[in-house]
Image (cartoon, rainbow, N blue to C red; front, side, top):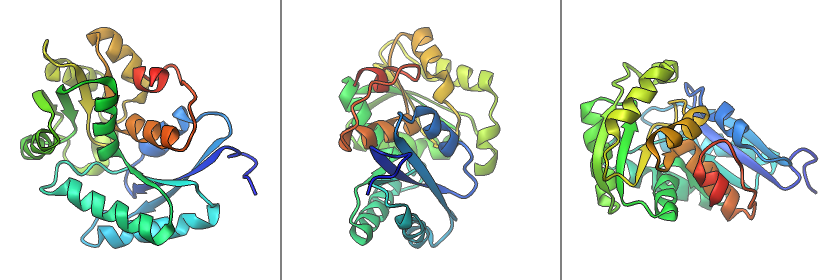
Length: 233
């Protein structure tokens, strides 16, 4: 039986408990008759178990897919850990699982970009791991700018002008796209402006995750106002 408000699809969205950006940003992107339902987990030593438990709390909503709104590139081996968690959730729920980190790579390939500038909320150590993760996925990182946020829970308080400056710093003439890593950093409302300013695709990790979930779930709506990815691909 179809959900009345999520007639086409219901997405279960799993986010860290401190993250206040993913839920409202995905709701901005939501097409008519697609519903987003959110559960939260603690980002601690038992993170994999916590993600699985959050997924279990969403199953009564009968989601058609699960989205894990977590960027792990700043941790050594973070992408492998995230893939392990996503695979575990998929096995236990029988549902397709999408992650912001892996979706970002898919989005870059979709727009045909290999040389990238990257913006993160992290410090120099975190950015070194981000660079390594993208290079391991066969991308050429030509610039990277971190906002050096003091803790995860203050990332969402980053001023809009600071985000603009970070994108200007990360951009290079040879960059074919500029990428945003860090699901807690609000970006969705700025993407159109940033693409106009820098004349190239801007891939926000939350947008990439939602784009991949929509397209692989059979929802092909072209959504304007949030960048080329959702509007054209």
